[in-house]
Image (cartoon, rainbow, N blue to C red; front, top):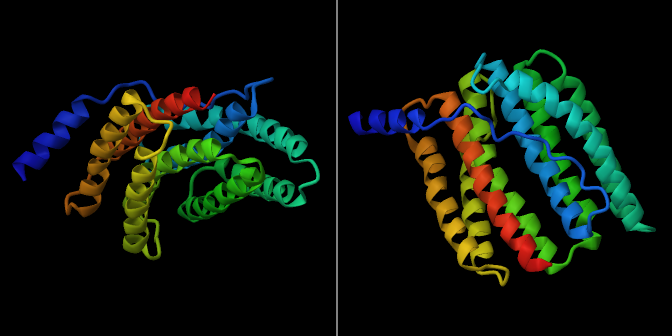
Length: 262
């Protein structure tokens, strides 16, 4: 128990005051590779917004989640329409892909309305469900244009979201949100993370830098597994920061893959 407390304390001391949560602008005039990557960010950063929403619900002021969320909603909303317009043009006569983006936009609009209100447990659960469906719609929308390299770029996003999903579920439980099948869902998230990590570690876009970062990501993910299996209650601010740290690592991996894919 003393070792656990010392571990948590040492990790907490390392927490910085600057959040990794920043909505990237739409890259005007960029090639498909960059816009595909931006669409991946749509998915991951929806989870960052939900995490901020839950942190507000927990009345945490760590890294000012209210300020982050208020700004993110505006920036994200603008980018949603820009990404959709780009893919509507690229998809041409592919009605299935266009419909997926239209349905994703509808889910965003409904979720945005709730994000703008004071957080409630009921809305947190609804937003969580909306965003998980929205992510699948955004994936489906780009599927007709995906190449093997772009699929790998997309897989880095899946790897990035898993620690966020574990963190969000854990924080929602602390808040008192009733989550059905919590243990089963978290175990599936953990299993999925390791499956995706194995796939990414074996792909042709890797170099020494990305392989080193993938090993670091695997090492860092043990924190979330430890958190899930521990009987001790973890500090929300520590969980939030660790999820942000993971986001930074995976973005570095994606940057390497994008450079290799060009």
